[in-house]
Image (cartoon, rainbow, N blue to C red; front, side):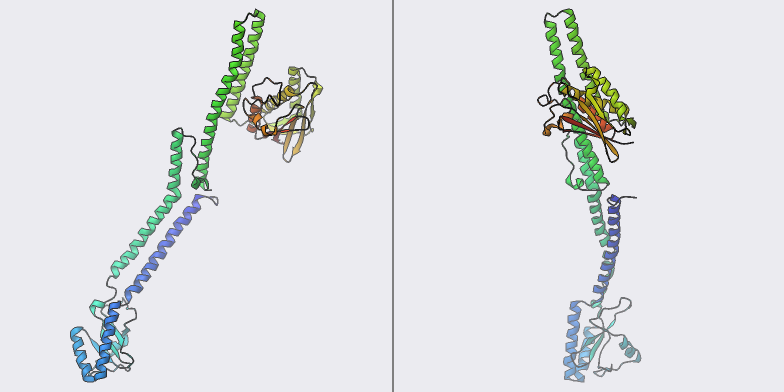
Length: 443
């Protein structure tokens, strides 16, 4: 079932409105034509009222004058006519047959609408001033109503649908074609490598399928732009990082070092460059592929023990300097290898920046349906406005956290690993150092 913002409902309203408007317009225009076409024109009213004035003048003069006027009227307006009193008795010496007298019962006032069902010309009645007499005559042919009824009716039948169809097509164009044309132009801009194109406000405000399509296209544009910028930045940083060990190797080759010193220097620099390339490729893989790791229950306490043993062996720390406060039932839903690498990178950073005789502590507490894993060191911390920067690749804050010789990729990789497991990670300054928090779902 379409949701309430779906384009389906707009189309329903548009089509239903078009149909109802068509029905209403046809009925209204037809009814208006029927009414206006059934009345006599203003010219007919003026002429017929003039005949009544002439009949009144003749009637006031006498019966003979009325008879002469009637004879003259029959010359001017061929057709039957008579002047009658209130009892429908003919005046002016005229006599009426039974059929003519019966026809007087079907006389219509000349200001009333004329019926279209009558085959011939109707009999009309024109009052003669205040005398009570009336002039009854056959309507002249030139005053016949409904003269252009067929033409007007055809206009009422065909013109409103044409106009409403034009309006309907215009609204349909505004609703569908115009937004699609805007999206087409944005897609063409991407094809032309113009990655700065923005979603038109008219589409950005929409909540229907076209709006979702526009937002998806905008997201893809943003994603592509960020990916290209990040790749370019990554290449610049990688080339910069590689220049340093290569320069040291060149200096070593030009210096008079012994074979053992040269081998040791070369091995150290090659190992460093290999670590740099491996970390860079891993980060690039996370950023471009964005894999979704298969998650399973992971025992945090057991994982921390293994990671701590490795970190103590690498750093030469005694085991008691890495502590843990983990509840016995603490199990998170994650990927064992990915979570191990993320926590290991954070732990290595914490060990690297901790002072002499410092400690690193893992504390875990519940947050609703999640667990929060907090790794705290005793280093100098990070300025508050730079807390988000440490997760960027090749980010180094040596002024704030001295003592490291890494490449600034460890936390960037850790962040990618956590996000790919559906978790979140952030940094904050604690009482004694930096606190890195990983939030993952509980089992």
